[in-house]
Image 1 (cartoon, rainbow, N blue to C red):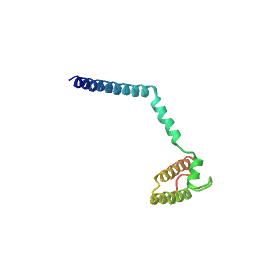
Image 2: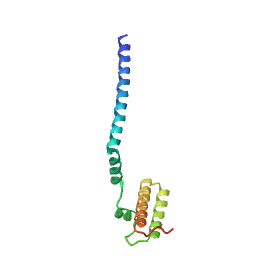
Image 3: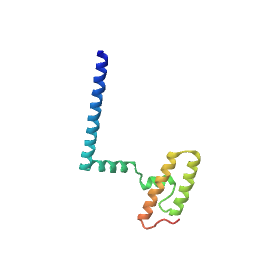
Image 4: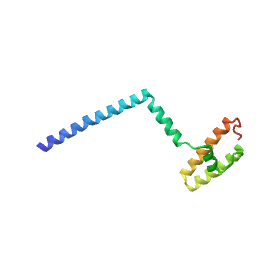
Length: 114
């Protein structure tokens, strides 16, 4: 009998603690969004995960003077090769490198050809 009562108290107490935790978490998210901390955190994580133009060129094996057509040829070859051999990590790095260089070429007014 005492064990059953103790069990019911533990279960009821756990529910109260869980609800309080969820409410505190929601309040913390609300406070973070009001103060701009959430946006700053997102921007910092994007910057840390990004790559530089130099890294992108090294991944694709192209030089500073390479045309965008050459970049696309290298990209296609590397992407397909890693698709066949199953290296999703390298395939995603190749994709990000191409996207970054595409953005650089567009910003420089060279645009995309092809």
